[in-house]
Structures are given as C-alpha cells and as structure tokens.
Image (cartoon, rainbow, N blue to C red):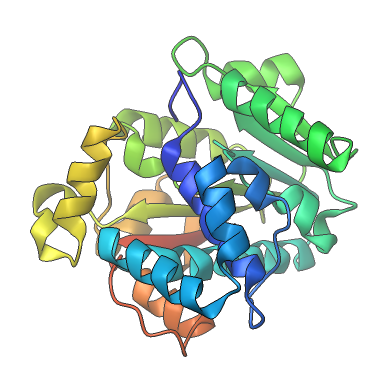
Amino acid sequence: MKAEKTSRTAQYMAFFRALETQRKDRLFSDPYAIHFTDSKLRLATRLYPYSIFTKYINNTINKKIPGALSSGIARTKYIDSLLENAVEKGVKQVIILGAGFDTRAVRLDFLKSIPVIEIDHPNTSNFKAEIYKKRIGLVPENLTFLQIDFNEQNLDELAVKHHLDFSKPTAIIWEGVTNYLTEEAVKSTFSFISKFAQNSHVIFTYVHKDILQNPASFLGGKKLLEDLEKIEEHWTFGFLPEELPNYLNQFNIEVLEDLGADAYREKFLPNRSEKGYEFYRTAVGVRK
C-alpha cells in the first residue's frame, strides 16, 4: 500500500487483465483494466490480438518476470470464483482492502446488487473514481470508496467513522497486499476481519516465507525481488503454508483452501504451459 502514488505492480496486474480480455479464449473479460495502464502498456494491449505481437509480448513478460502473467490471470479467475461461491453461501456485502485497480465491482454481474466497499489510500481511490467517471460515465451505485492513510489511521477507526456493519456476513478480499506489510499490520488486519459475522469469508494472497529468506530457491525469485527494490515496493512479510491454519485459528478463521500459483494455474489454465511464481499463494478462510 504505497501512500505517495499508485502502485506500479497494481498497474501491471491491470495490464495482464487487459491482455487477457483481448484473447479469443479468454478466461474472463475486463474492459476497464486498460484504462489503468500507461500509454505504452495500452499500445501493447491493442497490438496483442495480432499473433506476432502476442508471442513477443508474452515472451518479454515471461523473460522479465517468469510465470507472472499466467499466475496473475489464473489468480484473478480463482478469486472471482471464490467470491461468487461466498455470495452463493449468503454473503451480503463485499469489502476490498487495498483495492488498487481491482474492477470486480463493475465487471462481475453477480455483484451488481451487492454493496461493495473499497478501502484504499486517497491517491489511489481518487484516481480510480476519476477513471470510472471519465471512461464509463459514473461510479456504480453499489460501490463505495472509503479512504484511509495507514500512517495516520487504522481500520477500526475507519469502521467507526463510516459505520461499517459487522453484523452482515461479509466477503473480504485482500489481494496483493500482505507481502508489503509488517507482521504487526497483518495481525491487526486479521483481528479486524475477525469482527465480522459468522460465515464471513476472507480471500487473500500471500507469498511463501522462504522467498524472503532465500529468493533464489524459486524460479525468477531473486530477480523479482531485486526489481521490486528498484521501484521501492519491498516485500516484507510471508507465511509458511503449513503454519497458516494455526495462525488463522487465533482469529476464529478456518482455512477452506490454500493454493499455490502452480495449482490455480493448472486449475484454470491447464493448456498454458508457463513456469514460475510458485511462491505466490491464494487462500480462503471462513469466520467460524
């Protein structure tokens, strides 16, 4: 959650979703994603349907960040499916923490009648609202932006100020954030999540703790962390997958599923053979 500017990695994720939208065999459609990319990435997106450019762009991405493209696409679909399952099980509102350029509130039909609350830094939140107003004419009625500067405010204070309803079964999405936080910040956020009603779901991503201690043990890990250092988006936190159930149990949250990039890539993109990003994981838990 960078306070000064919108995240570069968030822009790359939007770019990946924009590329996927151009494919004939696309896993999902996100016509809004392209508007969150810079001019060079928008040009690449528009050229992507032409086979010569498809191959070049895919090869360039995979050379720089092996596995990131297919992992990001499969992860997007995986979280979409986990969210839809949570709604089918009775979730009445959705909260997206550190929302970045997440477009689920506008692109997923099953959310059209469900309140979606996005919580992010004012810079990102205001930029996103302007993009929606400029490109689609409005901010959807079911979408609320709540702004927070994590250097000056915490989620509990935000909840009191905006009268968040903890009594509703809620789906909390926390994607692409935990690896940038301190251990204390992660613990504080799970404590906040645990206050929501029984049957609330939390869908979140994390990185395998080993990549922080031994980046070279994962394909592309060492270069990725070096590149993140250059753009000042340092990774600071991870979990060991085998320790996650006990960790979440202290917040009365039960792990329902915890998959690594290889697993959710095989689940949703079995025909796209790409290696890398095995250190990135997605988990879903339910409030007991």
